[in-house]
Image (cartoon, rainbow, N blue to C red; front, side, top):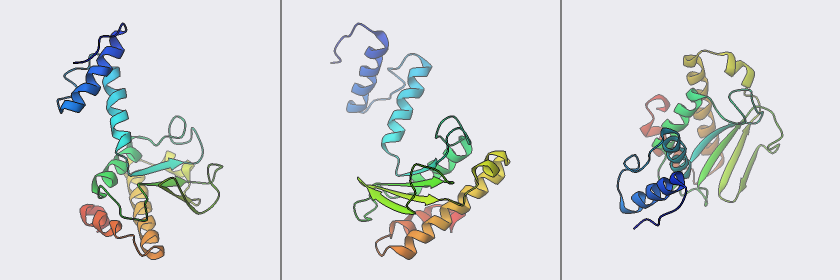
Amino acid sequence: MVPAQSDPSKRQLVAATHCLVVGQSVNRFLGPSQLKRQYVRRIKMAVWKFQLLPQTSDVVATGYRMDSVGQQVEDEVNDALPYRFRFHKITKIVLLLGPGDIQTAPYAELSGVAQKVVADFDLSKYSRSSDEKKRSLLRELVISQFNWLEENFDDAGFVALARAKLTWAA
């Protein structure tokens, strides 16, 4: 059973956590819609294998986040990537977009995360583009970075698996 707590929002969060353990619907136990969004977002982050990250804050969206178009492309790639990469212990790939201070090395691996800098990506141009143009820019970027991974690493077989599932990357 779920332990009782004094704060109702915490109690709902504990109930949501419990229902995930027993395999029931999250929305069944969550009350306020804000709590639903926060918790579902937290669940989604746990399964991210691919992320687009602007190196300059507040250019594309608030902070270092992508806009809704970028999130859609991330979701498409995450759905296409295999559960396990089998890419020398890497569990997540992050494309750092544009020039910035987060990372200066073109490619780095740290704690199971591969970070690839795409310094020539123009965040300002991207943010001024239409949604269709944004989607096209990001998809081309993903394809080019997947190609880079395949050219530079012998064990990047996960790229071919993802490319087969992405209709726009074939």
